[in-house]
Image 1 (tube, each protein chain N blue to C red):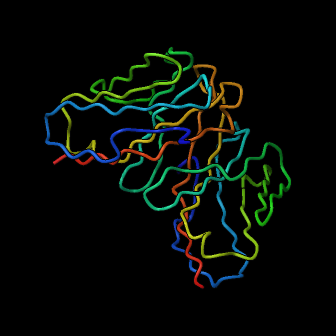
Image 2 (cartoon, chains in turn cyan, red; image 1 turned 180 degrees about the vertical axis):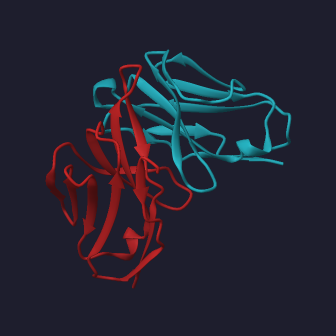
Length: 114
Length: 114
């Protein structure tokens, strides 16, 4: 059973388009995250949600909007895609009281903007 | 200076060798220290975490933290070809929103040659 799943796995799109990435976890966790791993392999937090409420919002363009319909899902919508948005986006989840040391990652969505 | 520095390698060792992976950090507020393993085109997988200075052992893996030197290490004994992956160190500190945020190193790419 997949603990943290993401769809799609690959996404190729043109500049200016709007796209969404979906994430689901079946671990019973109450906190979910979006991370971005750029071409230099740095993995950086973008957003964190706890019980459907935004708790971390790093310096990310407002073209990126996370949506959490329930505790098990956290989607990422990106408007007006730019070349610099090309990266691998990882969803992760944890229990809030273990967020400091135990986060579980999904397989990633490789976004390519042309 | 980045908060977390990690030699990206690549590091190539023969099967059975002892591997030493290291990270240094500058932020004294980091409280938890983690090692993640990331296989090619997969999500990071938590290997170990530590809280205090000292050693923690799990099978062939030993994590070491020296808070006075701001230095952490991961040792892999009897390395196997299946250990070939990128190893990411990560550290967490309490953020402004009252929740922990993870800061990752760049990752060290390890190849274990049969």
